[in-house]
Image (cartoon, rainbow, N blue to C red; front, side, top):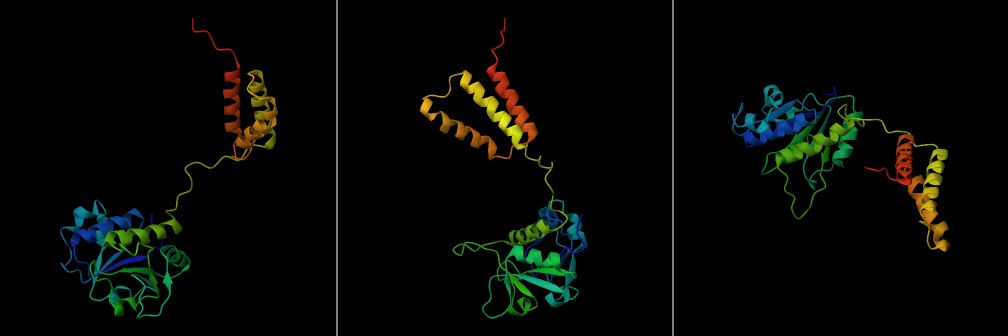
Length: 242
């Protein structure tokens, strides 16, 4: 289900078991299963995490606890700190999409680092990262909870991973131009028979408008046949229901 390059999620000093569970749920939604906790305030395991995870038990069962953020990311070659732009540190600032691109291109392990709910990451913890990841957010209400932050970054990673799904059905190729011309010709003839084109001086403009409807939308051969069947049915005398 997950890619070998799937990033690790590191929650630094998370405060509530419920928030850990919600973060685990967000992770599993997008194919991430490796959760690392740095000094969770209420200890670990936490009985409140399971119900909040809504079935993401595999994430909680595999969660590992570390004493420091440095130890939690020691085996990762690239670390991304989810935080606001820091003026006290000079390092690249990426969007979630740019982070996902970098993870997909990296041959080594990557980690996404999240701080505690109230205070966020400390400067020395952000300094562990190779880059800061900042989510575009309303500056007048920059209030994301932990699970929301996790799900935004996990979603962007999933778009670059094996989880990205192709369309349920391949798109049909557009119909050849000759089929479209036949459809337009059939429709014009049916409309002529019904006296649709009036006044006469507007006939050409009306025909051009109708033609543009069918030639610019990428109709498939199947769709063209279906529409021609509709026109044929409408042009025929109504069946008696006696």
